[in-house]
Length: 104
Image (cartoon, rainbow, N blue to C red; front, side, top):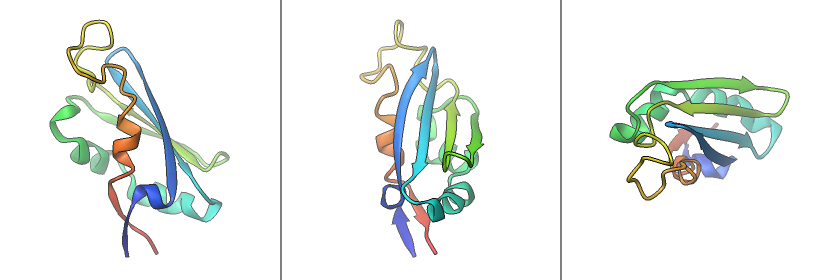
């Protein structure tokens, strides 16, 4: 069954220079394996399309039931030089919650 990621997770996002950082945290421990399976760097990169110019890295944090995503070249140069409305990437996490995933 397909559901939005927000049905099983919450997020927190921010920036470091031109890199957006998104923490994806499972609402329940049994949701963590679904997040690991469904929220891959390739799918995240495709989901954001042209907004992300660089690579997407994923770091797994099983003891926290979370993953951390780094979206490189995703902020139009970074907070001090970007002309984007969200130059610090605060909305990337909220946007990612709309990505459809397959939930068992």
